[in-house]
Length: 95
Length: 472
Image (cartoon, rainbow over all chains, first blue to last red; front, side, top):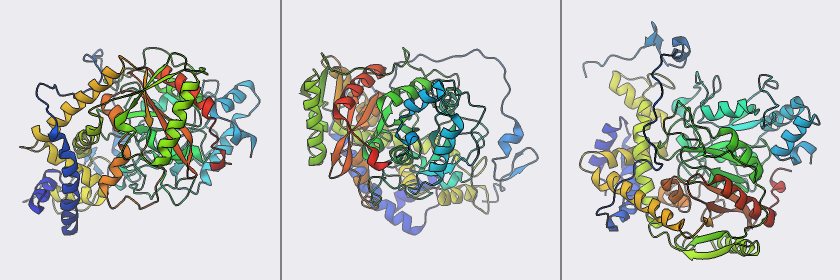
């Protein structure tokens, strides 16, 4: 069971500002999902290697040659608040 | 029915190549059909003329294509079904899409999807749900529901989507068309807006297996922009097989028992009989860890998504919410920009990766993934393919599962094990149950796409499914 406090803690880690209703709802919904997921605790996993990548590949390397990157203007065009050739953000603040 | 509508994409390409069909006529026909779409299958439709930069002498012959919203397409809205990317027009094009264009397919539309590909019904799109052309009160499946519904409704002749745990195969099954998830790494992920990077794979939606082979052949290639891309070891062949002589089919008990609707199971068993008539041997077998696939998947995919979606912070692209300082701008942007399912998965994933829980959740899930991959490796010692129903049921009614995340997740029960193992699998139309399409899934070892397509072709000829009532 995920408590209110746990949901709030995880939301802080995930940079999500949840409403009170959401905290309530997710605490119930996520507990149900975790109960199901925890079925994997039944398995004996001693001596089993974890898989992080399914296909056997060595490191794929390419020649380290300089090439043009995207034009700055094209990239900044998609930004919510471009300014002086960069991304403007609110002040980190007094916090 | 119009002549053009009756053609498969391969047939249309053939006519263009032979000079019997004018490229501009083909373009206008599908552009206008896509513009008249009433299933909410699209997030964007081109309003321009035939893009002349596309060389129609290529294998895809100028046949217009629909692209799942999450593929970055230069100058075209690419929003991954999310409000947080509303209006985002990328400065570049995904490798898979670029290769399709180079092979002669002009992009006519972007297709609707569950937000960031998280969902099995396309109801999680910030741009509204897509309807199933077989029954508009029902979902088309998901997450690539727009791609599947559009092909089934004939508003595009073919399309592409992505499959992380079933997001190509399940909607293909629910819409009565062909959907192929290739081997992990066959197609570059560059420019695919990421959900779960160790699972995401692009693939085609088509009316038949020949069209699927054409699209796979155009897209599969190693790409310097994706270090996990491998391409395929041999060129993709157009499938020709008409029998299954000597083919050994394994039927996993775990994916064909409890939880599968009776009508779906009946259609599956009928096709096993067809396979026997075509010369295959059919034997029951076990994938002992497959039932744990869903648990492992719903830890691994959310864990990876919580990391991938950290980039949406209102700084470089997409929407930004007001905040009194930098931190509250981040948290407000994400609160307002993400929908419910995305928040749920980000929370589960962050929890599973958080201090004190990593070993118990993510670490265990990765070990279960090994066990599932080993189950399949053992299967290939005795069988050429593993076959099952694609989804446990037919298309469900809109809203039927939105209040119960777990019920929604169970849709992926038969498709998730292959995703975790990184192996290719196809869903082909397998008739109707209560008037709604059912899918038949064929999975094979890594890089066995040519053999899978051949087996699927032989069964497709034998099943003789006619999907024209959804588009005519």
